[in-house]
Structure formats: C-alpha cells, structure tokens
Length: 401
Image (cartoon, rainbow, N blue to C red):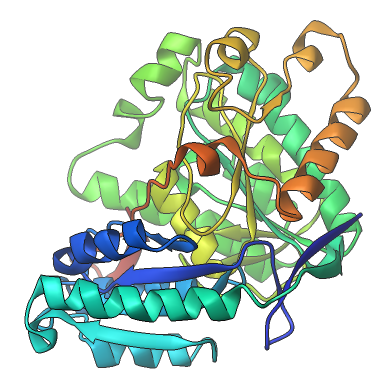
C-alpha cells in the first residue's frame, strides 16, 4: 500500500503539513487559539496544564508538548507562553529541540507587552511559516513508514464484535508490511491483560504489560477506590456492555494477532516497528494526545455509541459497526462497519475498504472531524502511590490518569 506525504529532515513522513501554535500553559491557550483563528494552515489546542504541577507531572507535560511539535504531521511550531508558568519557555524549547530540528519561534505574553501585541506579532510569524510550509510537495511513501494509533470510545457490543476486530485486521496488515500499530488505554486491558502478556516478544515486555495494569489498579485501591465502579461507563452500560472484563476483551481485539514488541510510557517517542503498547488512560482525548506525541500520523477510532472526538495534529478516522449510530451520526463518522454485523460483507472486504480509506486520508483526504473542526485535546497527569506501604518491599510507583 502506498500513500503520499511530506518528507521531514529526519526522514519521517508526515501526512499533514500543519504549523502548530503551541500554548505552554493554560494561561497562554486563549492567545494561541486567537492566533490560530487568524491564520489558515495553523492548528492549536487548549493546554489545561503547564503550571502548578509536581516535577514528574510537569516532565510528562513537557514531553507531550515536545512530542506534538516533533510529530511528522507538523512543519513547524510557534510556542506561546505567559511568562511566569512552571513550564518556562526555555524548558519547552529545550525539550522540542531535543526531539526535532523543525522551524521554531517563541512569544512570551508578558515580554511582548500583553495579549494584543502577542497576537499581532505571532500572527505575522505564523503567516510567514505557513507560507514556507506551503512550498513543500507530497511524495510517495510506503505503508512501512506509517505509525497507526488505535483508539475506541463510546463502545457498545458492536465494538467488540465487529469494529475492533476489523481494526485488528487492519493493524495486522500494516504490521505485516513493516509499519507500526499502537494499542493504548491501559485501563481497558483490565481482565484481559494476561492475554496480551502471552503475546509479548519476551519476558520483559510481558512483565511490563502486567505491571502497567497492576499500577493503575493498585493506585485506586490505595485510595479505597475500584476502577470497576466507573468502568464500564454509563454509556457503555446503556449500549449493552455489562462488565469491565467484557469491555477489555472487546478492546484488545484492536491489537490483531501480531506479537507485542514493546511497552512505551505516555508520550514517549516510538521507535519500534510492529505492534506496540503505549501506557495511557482510557480517556479518549488524553490517550490520543499521547500517541500523537509518540509520533503516530493517523488514528483509527471505533465507536458504537458515537463521538465527534478529533485531534488537532493527527487525522482521526471514525469507524462504527452500529448501524443505527452509523446512520444517526453519519456527519461525524467516516466508515460504516455494520455490514460485518449483518453478514452483508466479509471481514476481508471491509478490511480492504478501510485500508483504502486509510490510504486516501493519509494522502490528504479530510476526515469528518477535520472538516467539522473537532480537536479535543488533553494531556495526561502523573500520579504516584506507595506500593507495599510499611513493609520492607515498600516502593513508589507511578501511573497515568
């Protein structure tokens, strides 16, 4: 399978050519949005973090922002900060420069003399950068250069029965051709984690899969909570999913059948080929942000109940196998997989059709979320808890939420 994209200086291929207006903190987010609204070809998002964080939490935020700037779908980045936040401009730019050598400009609101002057200066800069980006031409690329993120949200029984297995077939084909597929949402491995662990390429990766699930469950138990009280969600239950284990068994179908090569921390740069896991929360925008920061160029997203969720950097192809949802929310969905439920088409026919859609989107076709402007984004928080408190085996563990 071939597609066309933009070749970056590090050799990677981007399927979009965005100029990213990156807010370093929540206090700069509205200014970044105003700049984006005035310059076609730019994207931005609301950064809810960037200040008043613990060091380990802030490090995750910096890693995620840098990963978004480094994503191959981004031509260059304009960072906007307030000036007094914990994620200081020099910290943000240092992290970005450690990941890529793309065009990078900065504006500090307090140094510029307020928001109006910052917007005026940043808009001029953004116009010039977009003009530079427009000179780039697409070139042919092979599917082996594709890094595919997989997500599910608003799931119902059709997700586990048809849509997620379909994604698994697509992931298998991408992996077989030398590409990368990324499975996420650690909380939705619970009850099925041993099935994934058996597919690890070695004992170390197997232990990592079990560990990321255990860390989340143990963290909840430390505060006398149980993840099963909130998962499946009310929407999952209304759709017919009865237990977290049932939801997890449906979720992991997205992983297809390939061996699991590695487990990555949230927003960590992904370097492996084949099937990998990224440790993310189950929250869709947070999970997708992590995979975008990891380097994924495209997201396949299944939904049974329906959701408009998109991403500012990475196009999101929305797939549903629920015929009612595919009809009622057709303005928000890209691919109808319901013929698989009703026996109207085979898995192979739908797999090939979805691969064709994927190639077209990679080559520039806009998804529904891009057309309608849905770019929900959030960054994970990092929590800590003490495992085996009070014993000789006491140790501090981390988890993402």
